[in-house]
Length: 368
Image 1 (cartoon, helix red, strand yellow):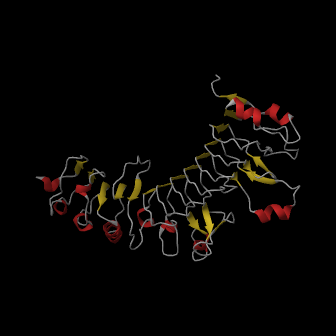
Image 2 (cartoon, helix red, strand yellow):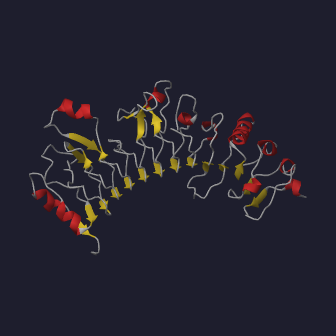
Image 3 (cartoon, one colour):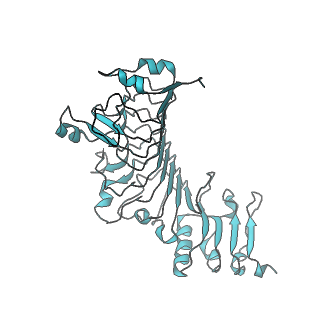
């Protein structure tokens, strides 16, 4: 009777095993789900290979090798799943997209993860300490052109998301379709993109090919203690959230050479026309939102949220309207509210134009 089964949902923690040889007999299955937190139901690719009619699948594999075998078999049969959640290790994360891969606790990644052929939309990497970055010369991550969400948590070795050298060997632009980037508990992460001249000599780079991160809408960075500055001019950004990055000095920063070439009196414009929310807290070394010679062009900005722990931040950067050539001072985006503690607000310095303070709308915590 089970041979004709089309729908099977086994998302239970109490399942102790999957009898060998059972799944290959269920050749009519279209929907198959297992509990991804149950290591006792980890799968081997050969058990899944006969399921040619499968359309929706949730399950975990024993290791990266088994996951790659499964993906390869799907390629060979020219069958793409409509919806899937594929896991190596186990996962506690809530997924937001229909096509998601989670890799957790893998310390020896032999071979590469094949992603583009299965049109992955969301990638989650947890506690993979061997990783230094996500894209190198041998990686297929750079081909994941449908990827929309990427979360990296608790990877102790990761230094950057993309090394600059990865652009030299390929015309592909990593993460060109990425919309959400979530980076948390990455103690060695110092930049999104790094000029990797060799181990121990890598430096942060803002000289980024324009397509990389060009569709990024939301970035969250939490407990990345080596991060000193973020990338400027990601023009589709809508939300920036930064928490507990103890070395962070600037949120938006330009190359030093760029500032020197333009001269000390020149303005550097940070173009963020879609930015709505800028939220940060527990940044004890933060001195500026953008470089002192910089102004922000962000007429859509609605909220600057300073929750606390940013005692060295003494300056709100000037704003320049998207249209108009006037001076940047005494202008603020019409929708902007700055929300923080009264004590911090009163400690701010206003350069040579105190009228700038008067055009900003401040809402202290505790007020309604």
